[in-house]
Length: 267
Figure 1 (cartoon, rainbow, N blue to C red):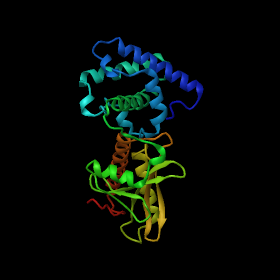
Figure 2 (cartoon, helix red, strand yellow):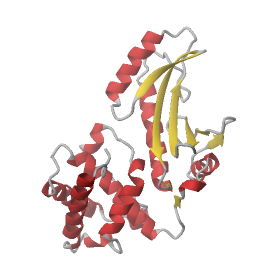
Figure 3 (cartoon, rainbow, N blue to C red):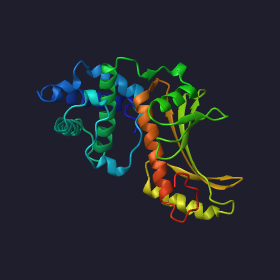
Figure 4 (cartoon, rainbow, N blue to C red):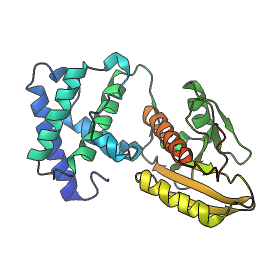
C-alpha cells in the first residue's frame, strides 16, 4: 500500500494524521507518545521510509499490534492499546473504509514508532542513500546477533540468527535492497510440476509474499524476492525487522514441504 501516491491521497492521509495527533495530545495518559514530535515530522518520515514497512500475514492485522520502538521509549501496554483504538477511530473519521484501516493503522504505527526512535537516538541510525553498500548490510546483520558474510558475487548471505538463511543484495543502480530466498531441490530429478503445485500451496498460505519456481541445472528451485527502495535512505531498525520477517516467511514456506521436495537446510 502506497500511502501518498497521489496529491488527493496525501491530503486525505495528512488530515487523518492531524486528527489522530490532536486526539492523542488531548489525552493526558497518551500525549507523551508524541513528546517533541510534530505532524510535519511524522508526515515527512512516512514519505521517506514507507517502503521499509514489510507486508504482513493477514492474521497480523486481526491482532493487537506490538510496539516496535526500542524498549527504553516504549509506553505501557494498556496505553499502546488505547493508542491503536484512537488511531483507528481517527482513520474512520478521516474517511477511510473499514477494510482499509487494519493495514493502514499497522503501517502508520510502525512509522510513528520509527520517528519517535529517531528522536531518541544518540547515534544516527539512518544511512544516507549514497553510502549504502553490501558490506554495511553485512556489518549491520552481524551487529544484531545474526551471522552474515559476503558471497563472491557481493551478495550478503545471512544465516544463523535468522529463521531461514537468505541473501540480501544492494542494487546501487536502482537504489534497491533486495531480499532473496531459495529452496533447492532435494534431487536433480525432483519433478517441476510437483514443485509448482507446492509453490501454489505456499502462495495460498503466505499471500503477503510472492513465491515462484525457477529452473536450475540442479532442478526446480522455490524462489522468493522482495525489493525495497532506499532512495530516501535506510532506517536500519526497519531494515533488520524486514530481513527477519522475510526469513521467517521463507521458513514457514519450507516447513509446508511435507513431501521433502526441497532441501530444508535447517532441519
